[in-house]
Image (cartoon, rainbow, N blue to C red; front, top):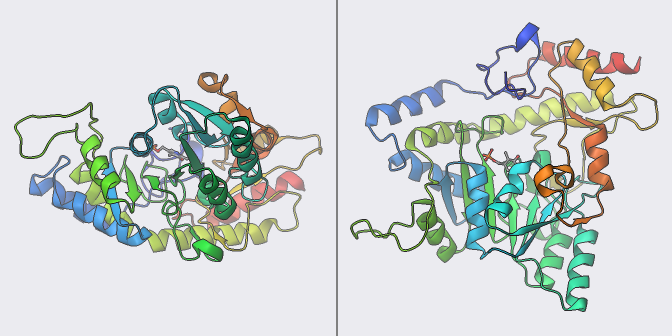
Amino acid sequence: MTGTGEAHAPGARGPEGTIPLAVPNIGELERRYVLEAVESGFVSSVGPFVSEFERRFAERVGSKHAIACATGTAAIHVGLLLLGVERGDDVVCSDFTFVGSVNPIAYCGARPVLVDSETTTWNLDPALLAAELDRRATAGEAQPKVVEIVHVLGQPADMEPLMDACDRHGIPVLEDAAESLGATWSTGRYAGRHTGTVGRIGAFSFNGNKIATTGGGGMIVTDDDDLAARARHLTTQAKVPDVGYLHDEVGYNYRLTNIAAGLGLAQLERLDEFVAAKHRIAARYDAAFADLPLVLPPRVDGLEATYWLYSVLVPEGDGRGRDDFLAHLQARGVGARALWRPLHAQPPFITAPVLAGAVGDGLFARGLSLPCATELTDTDQQRVTEAVRSFFA
Ligand SMILES: *Cc1c(COP(=O)(O)O)cnc(C)c1O
């Protein structure tokens, strides 16, 4: 039991019949492609499923290039290297996110500068970012090498003011779209664009609990031909093609395997189905909780979220907190889970500069995610709803 439910077979229940938070949705198509990969003998990172998965992924999100990686963390790491991040640089990152967003900054020997969320999208606050970049410019201080923008829980960030601030100071943006595959902007400058395709580089994850999975895996997307070529080079041990064992720099063994890509291709073909399921589950929860004193997930015009993990905030000041709510749900067989502890409170990043932090602290103190596996049955969702309502009865 991992706590994410990802170790369970599809639709399986956790201990004591607990409704899992999220489980992968693996069907016939996945079995067929994985078997085909195994039987073809192309089991490692050279093989037709890898290139087909990359081609179809790029087409799906609307980027020119896609480079499949071993994990989402590896995709972010390489993305930062592509943008020139080196020892001693600053890299701005959301404070309220999973640790996989920020560990790669440390791998580069760079220093994360953690920026709090805003309450509308729960993502990096554009006003805080703009103020910090403007302040550095005025003070003549070095600017961050990269601004990493995370779209948490499948919710697109408010991208226009974020991009304006970065463009004004000439700072490249890396989007951590690990949780937001399928999410888009529908109005304004980026209407029709997918998360991950607005910055210079986007990174996705196909870990077991993400909306589409390869078991473990990730993807780098970019429209830049040179960056794409360099991404392929760095993820394959910096091997120079057609020359016997020549490696022209320190590279990484970061490619996705053909077996994993077979799984990924099948999941990609079913992505619309998964997004539709997440929307259906979110709409039902929204309706069922409308009269409760819970804060429901962001709904922002023009930002088309996927509700990857449907998450709510318990009310402030009713004497009971998030942990009481969690215990109440768990006692009723509901596999809910707390939102992340912000990075500024994580031991490895405790000394990182933080810009504000109260919003992320509040999301952690009050937030939890409810079961929202794409195969969640109506009966199970009803059980979750009743367990939630009974906490407020
Ligand atoms: C899952 C995740 C990652 C890391 O992806 P892995 O594939 O698990 O390495 C990075 N950032 C965010 C926001 C994530 O949710």
